[in-house]
Image 1 (cartoon, rainbow, N blue to C red):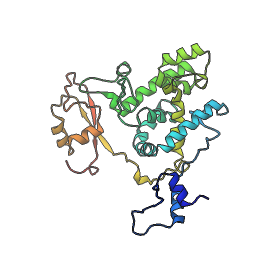
Image 2 (cartoon, one colour):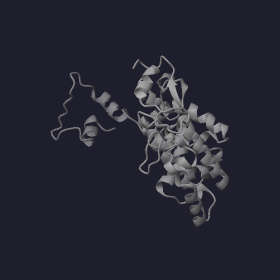
Image 3 (spheres, helix red, strand yellow):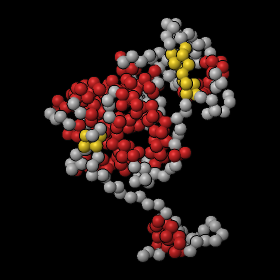
Image 4 (cartoon, helix red, strand yellow):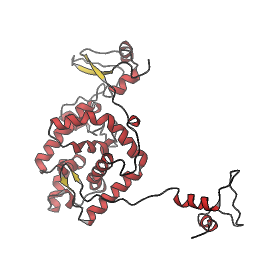
Length: 308
């Protein structure tokens, strides 16, 4: 075994004169310091599970290319610990909203992990202009009945956006025949996936040669599914109280213009910030509502926030 002096010299932690100065009063022994340097942090290769699937459709892990790509996403997402831990925390709030809508439409529960990789379960904005947890483009949102204007952008309404995502995915499943291709088309578009399948004369996602983003897409979904379902296996330690909690709310119907949401919030015992946290689809501090449309604004139950 190398001496501590050899190890430190290799690490560039000892001067040319061979002198080592510890910035502590009681320097550790050579033996303890050597053990600390060698064992202070360990990174392990991961065992890719033999049986992985998306929506009941197995990954062909006997293919070495598929195995390597799956291994990559498991490694990247396991050792990006801060990001993965945030996914555990956010999922505790978002999944109870997403899951029953998927179930209502007969869409496999695994599609909630598609939302995880699309946005990190945040109201993200992509460079292309896609918005919300489901990353819906403006044209797609409007085509599917979402209101998108200066006052209101329902792509930020998680319930309504999930409904739109379900409609898209059902149409894609009908067109392509598999949930895997339906999911891939959410990233590349139905036309894009159809074109590549035809050009390459294949029928399966895992046989396609794709660009970086779509080529990693399904593997990222399956990796997050695997990690989020087996936290202990991948070294994530937390208590239930560490997760973000859903806040109970009730809905207030509004069918008129609202000139000032600050005043509106105060009348309901909250402040404008809290109103926006629960209703990110309200894009301005007022609502024109010339058509007298009925909106439902979510208000948190009392006792979950400090007074405004």
